[in-house]
Image 1 (spheres, rainbow, N blue to C red):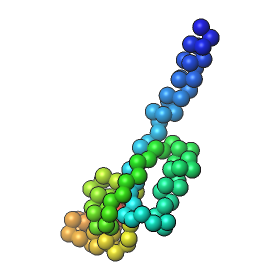
Image 2: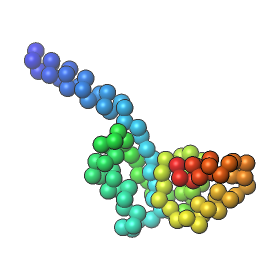
Image 3: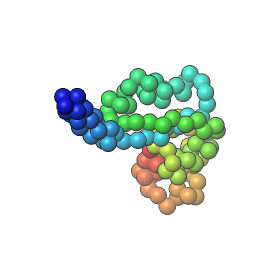
Image 4: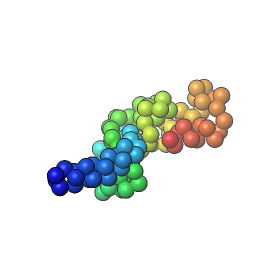
Length: 107
């Protein structure tokens, strides 16, 4: 009976913490050390410390990564700046204010 009581208490303490974790989708465009910060943040527990869980995906090519970011499929991306600047100056962003364009590009 004590074991059951301990099990209930431990589950009641861990389930709310897991339910409160916000899931992020993070992307990088190449496998190299300069883009390893996403893995460092995930593996070191920094994301978990602040209530996030993360899926890190590799999307080869900055233009594809920027397209996925603008479409809302990604929460954060490590990518080159020229394609991101071209995306924000494209006609699809023309109707947005500069503040919302920046928010979309850095989301």
